[in-house]
Amino acid sequence: METTMPPSQSTSVPQSKRGTSLTESFAELLDFRFLIYQSIVHPLEAIETYLPHLSVFWSASKIFTPDQDIPHLQGRVILVTGGNTGLGKESVRQLAQHHPAHIWLAARTSAKAQVAISEINDAVPSAKLTFLQLDLSSFRSIASAARDFTSQSSRLDILLNNAGIMAVPEGMTEEGYEIQFGTNHLGHALLTKLLLPTLLSTAEKGTDVRIVNLSSEGHKLAPTGGILFDKSELDAQGTWARYGQSKLANILHARELARRYPSVTAVSVHPGFVRTELYKPNQETNLLVRCGTSVMGPFIMRDVKQGALNQLWAVAATKGDVVNGAYYKPVGQLSNGSGYAHDRSLARRLWEWTEKELVAQGY
Image (cartoon, rainbow, N blue to C red; front, side):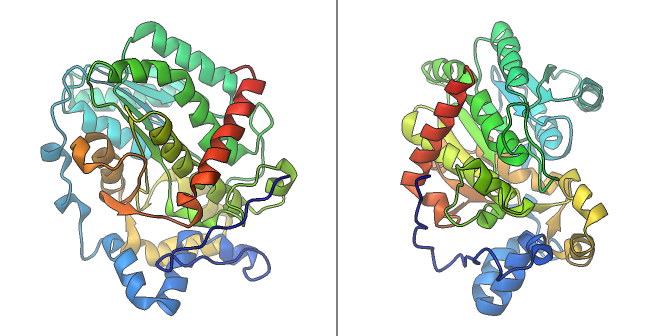
C-alpha cells in the first residue's frame, strides 16, 4: 500500500498521536478529548474554539436567523439525506418555510419519514415534501434512489448530504466496506456522483447550486495518514478513528468537488456539539461518554435547532459569502480543520480511489 506522510499540522489545531498514548476509553470521548487537551496546552485557543459552544452565554441564532436570513426559495428543488430526524429534519422544516418548489426527504424507513413529513406539513401546509427511500450502506439502494429522483425531477438546486452514523460497532456495508466509511463517505459520494449531471445542468441555467457535506470536528480523530485505503489497516483502528476518517473524507470530498466542478458550490460543515440520536448508542454502552455528555453537555452541546444553523447557512448564504470547497464551523466561520483536511494531494487520492471503487462496483 502506498503511504501518505502526515502534512504539517496547523499550530492552532493540536493533533494528538494515535496508539498507546491514548487509551481506547479516553479516545471514545471524541470531541471532549480536544476540549481537555486544548484547555491544558493552549488555553487561549481553547477559549476561542469552544466559546461559540457555550450555550449558557451565547446563542448562535443571533448570528444566523433562518426566518430572516434564508432567502425566498421559489423554484428550488432540495434533497436532504437523513431528513427524517435530527439535524436533517430540522433543516427540512426550516427550508420548507421559504417556499421551495420541492423538498425530497431521503431516509431508510418510510414510516419514520412519513411522520416527519406529516409534522412539517402541519406547520407548513403548502410545502411539497416527498419521501425518497435511501439506505446509504447499500449501493443498490443509492442507485435506486437516484433513479427515482431523476425520473421525477429535471433539476436539483441543493443537495444536503446530512445523514451519517457515529462510532457504531464493527460492521460492513452491503458491498463489504467498513460501515462508517462506507456510509458516511462512499454512500454520499455515490449519491452525489449519480445526481451530479442534474446538479450541473441546473447550474448551467445560472442557478446557485449547492452541495453541503455534514462533517465534524471529529475528523481530527482520523488515524495517522488521514485516510487508510487498506481495508485491514482501517479495520485495525478503533471505532472513533474509523469515524474520524469518514468525517475527514467528507471534507476532502467537498474540496475536490469544488476543484473539479467550480460551477457548483460545494462545502463541508461542522454542526457543533449537538444533542442528537448519534450519541445515544454510546451513552447507553460507554460510561465515559455518558458522564461526559451529562456533565459537560449543558455547557457545550446545542439543541437540534441551533445545531442545524451552520448547514442552513451553508445552503442559504449569499454565494459571495461562501468559499467554494471550504470547511466551516458554526456559524459560517471558515476553518482549516486538521492538517489532513487541507491536504490537496490526499483529497485527489481519495477522489481517485473512490472513483475506482465505484466503477468496480458498476457505478
